[in-house]
Image (cartoon, rainbow, N blue to C red; front, side, top):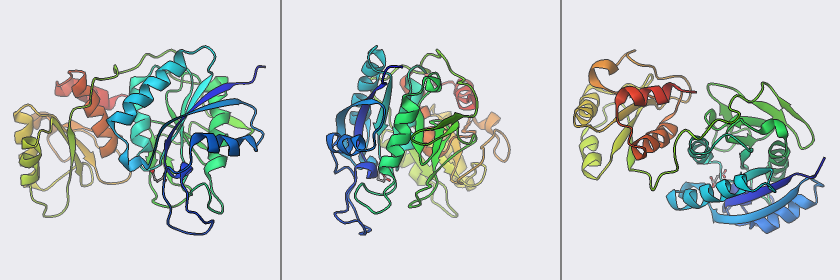
Length: 328
Ligand code: SIN
């Protein structure tokens, strides 16, 4: 077997973070260049040929269209290169689920594309970065990783981009899968897939857009004001996502404001501010008569990405939008 060649695209995050001390709590994300991270990885004896490109050195709270556009073209180029077997994106954990989902929706499910992050900076005692990285290399090198879409490796879990959710602010075990658990379990030298790949040769669901239209998230809370909705529309929002209570609900004035927006032709997706569970149609809110879209298993931040891609692709019909949210 030839040594796998993995392209590493670095964006920053805690995996490239530095505290300047092994025990200091405070740190800065995105300090370590990919060449230095790869020098550290070399000492692990990983059986893969790794080459790295610094796309950005930022905390992932600052990632956006400029970085995504560059990242997407580097991934497309690596996937088209017969000499490259897989791609790893090092990324901050705060928005890893959004970047992973955006890439998953816009790339064909061919060669493995694996996001990886860490919860402790590179120089912290008990740092999880190199371990997670070695796990990601194991996944990206595996022929059985083809046709699974974009994945996120954190700890020893492999999560599908569509399922991955960050659920803890500081625990090393910060991610879980919803509605599906992990696709498999990995260590630097072992890999167990729980099912065969489901998306072999599937084309990209959406073309890479020229830009992403403005979509805002409206957060529901008890006694919240509803005039924020009109303010967002007048600021140029082309779609709204409700981070609603429970099953995507909101106080009556807020629901009324959102339904007026739908009547004016701006799509509204009802998601939930609750960490887990599905938002289904017509449970407490009459979606059929108002024209809302239910987010199903997608949280507000992932719903926003999907809505942006649909709008960028010219999809505005609520029934068509609902079918995209229903899809797994
Ligand atoms: C970030 O998302 O860049 C900071 C937090 C992290 O990577 O865990």
